[in-house]
Amino acid sequence: MLERVAIFIDGSNLYNGMRDNLQSTRVNLQELIRQLLRDRRLMRTYYYNAPLTDDYDTELREGQHRFFDSLRRIPYVTVRLGRLHRRNDGSLVEKGIDVAIAVESLSLAWENAYDTALLVSGDGDYVELVEAIKRKGKHVECAMFKNQSAGVLLEHVDRFHPMDELSWSKILF
Image (cartoon, rainbow, N blue to C red; front, side):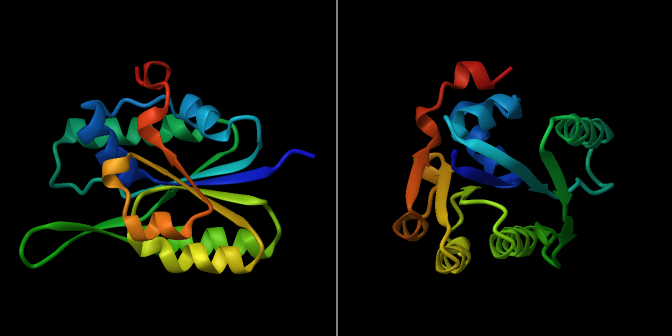
């Protein structure tokens, strides 16, 4: 029986990693999923992000909206949206993304919906989530670019997949 994998993508983390390491953010998500899965069975991919606020350029917002719509057309991909919040200093911060990833991945672990959770993020804030999923008897893997992966997270996951080593010529368009 093939190992059942659920993929949880922190969209902003992926976007920033691609921008900084590949100077491109145009991703074929189906191909990225295929390469991360290898020869395992995909249960579902969850993609989390926050829509741009009205003070962003209309063209950027419309492009992001088209991207989210294209993801929704991929079989077994679910898009979950949080929100952007402007701080008093003017900076923007995502709200609801980390919690949504934690709640969904833990709920699905409790329902025995997967054998392995593959987290596409390098955020060290996920350490407690990783440990909670492992306590449920599941494997937890992480995929991200090496230079954007918190060492503390890598110490806790069962397996790290450096995204630097993927075949990006097939993923980017």
